[in-house]
Length: 115
Image (tube, one colour):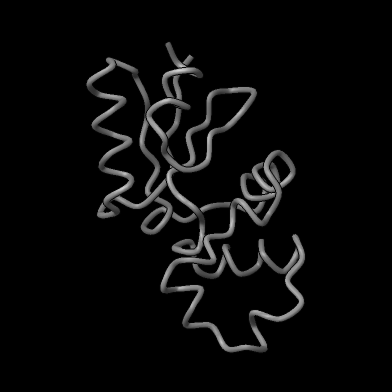
């Protein structure tokens, strides 16, 4: 089964995840959602699995630049709309492992899921 790593090419956390995967000889495809976009179905699936609060990156500059009105009353539907409009707001990386996904990068979590 081929895994898919979703994220943004220039992100430091993405680079760490890609280096870890390469060093552990894990085969994966890479989907840059900043250049290639992302669809509603992926975001809904990730939010259903992890909760939109995990998938939406509130710590990033893209989210912080939103107006107070845009940040108010966020629910899953609004979070998905924000992430569709600005994929930089998606927490990264997202690693799809078939039936489950990992959000963010922590070497010990990757090791437990992949080794």
